[in-house]
Length: 195
Image 1 (cartoon, rainbow, N blue to C red):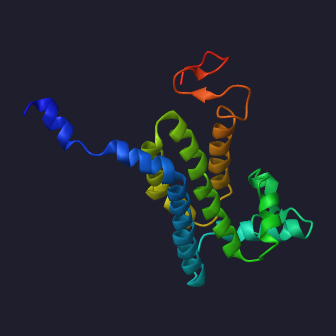
Image 2 (cartoon, rainbow, N blue to C red; image 1 turned 90 degrees about the horizontal axis):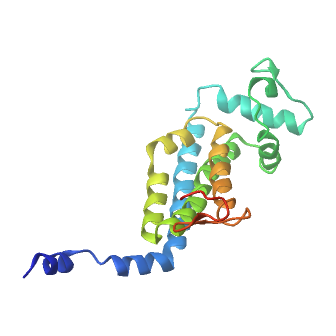
Image 3 (cartoon, rainbow, N blue to C red; image 1 turned 120 degrees about the horizontal axis):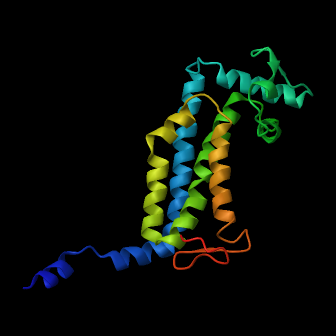
């Protein structure tokens, strides 16, 4: 048996795996994102229930949401207008969602949802640029990354929404939101940019 024949017989069944992931990849990404939100949402709920949020970040963002809904931008914990501390305009739509269920847990779950939502544009981009196997693998690596998990578990930070918005913007412009589209062979059409 030659080395070429040995290599062909010992290689993994990547065409079959690729076919399965091409068909079910998006469902797998939905399941991974849902698992992320459920696991980290539950962990945040346990931390909140047992008074394990001892820093000030969650408290002052909850107060910001409460005050926005009551027509004030002042934060007594910071002693200033909250836009003067961190210019986080995302707190206005977050406050609108907070109005539905007025609980600090709402902010924690929204943060987990925002972090998990970045998995979808990542999947769409990588599937188009690489293949379904690589796309699902990168989504798994993204959602399983310890830094992302720690960010979701540590208090509440509006900057988590920026990562999700950035990922969606990266997908929207070159993959259909702009005039050109990104193709692994030709780059961004009409701009001369290589992929």
